[in-house]
Length: 489
Ligand SMILES: Cc1cc2nc3c(=O)[nH]c(=O)nc-3n(C[C@H](O)[C@H](O)[C@H](O)COP(=O)(O)O)c2cc1C
Ligand code: SF4
Image (cartoon, rainbow, N blue to C red; front, side, top):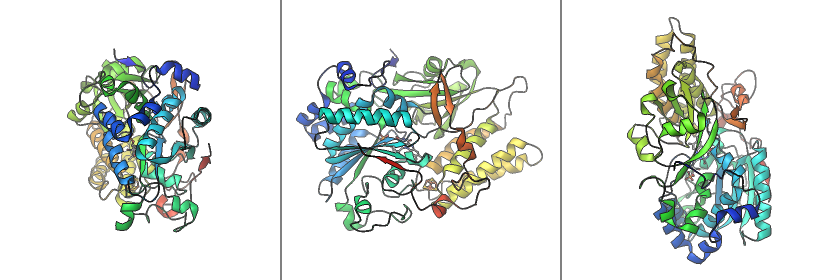
């Protein structure tokens, strides 16, 4: 069996009764409480679950680190659910929240018990109206049922910036500042109650550029935050209820469990589906997208990993198999292009998206990112300047990730660096490659096609929607929250 429904049920489980009836087995929150934090961490570690937010970091190891840092901290830890999903070509977290909201909350509450957190914050984009309503109702139902005990559940709706999904950018936004990534990881510096309560440092206009690593004394007392992706947390209840070995019934030793994949681009259908890890990419593209794999020219994995071509479609959906072919699984969001598609346009779309969304705290990321995007735009025009433009792109790719604070700059290198060599083979002269879908986030799934967030195409590199870009970096221009809505439970 390849198509599964562990975290993405075919029929949405929208009420608490639906969820309890469908889950079978014990109450995972009660079971986690009776097992105790160390045994739960052991079970999660033994399950081999890896974070589904893109990096694939082992979840049990992260929980252990946060618990250890939290022990001895002066304040309680916090759990943040990363539901910001801004990766182009990814709609899996919103699909899970729509179909299985209680599994996400269940996982977050178990995590909170394990790391000693008093608060769970579910972080979404304010524009995710459907998911916000579903999660708000689910929180109310959980509170009425008393599942949360003394743990507070909050919903946070942040700006539509791509960097809201970067974990420290999300913490910045929750703290009331723009979503500019920090240097300190969440286990070193969590959500900062101090800035909200005004006890000290009460300057909400200070950006991440000023908030570096916690100082030596803070490092032992600052409360850490555990940030986990929606899909990661939706897997926790099953592991606690049925055990690590049950989780490992799907997948491989290094990539156990299932993965919720999104397929979009030039395929007959768009959609989301959950697959046993180890399933071939070919099966995923055919099952969800109805793709004619003999016509596939390139497959983007969001805008985060090296691009794949048709000869690589038999790769298994595992972290190790993708690594072996020089790529990475990312969030399992696959954007498919026909073999007649003009890859220069695809590359230009990716480069523009990343250059615009760069916050500019690291100069090479913004300035070289813009040079890459500009060079590719000139390559589309062709003509005598094409080779010169390509050389400029190649040069800027060498330095774009220098001193980068987050992974966005390396994404430019990974995606454009692998697309560029293929851009020399121009689009098929025999066949029209069709319209290239823009590289932007997904707004919704309507009748088997994704509606795309085309407003993003008007966003300027300074993060304004003005007609003309100011030339300033967002980090130099913006010092207050960008359209943030906080929802109490
Ligand atoms: C530019 C950028 C954007 C990201 N966007 C998301 C996102 O939308 N959702 C998400 O869960 N993780 C995103 N991540 C990864 C998070 O920083 C982090 O690794 C993840 O939330 C950790 O959770 P996990 O261990 O459960 O995967 C992004 C990372 C980068 C560098
Ligand atoms: S690498 Fe780019 S996006 Fe990340 S913090 Fe630096 S400038 Fe911002």
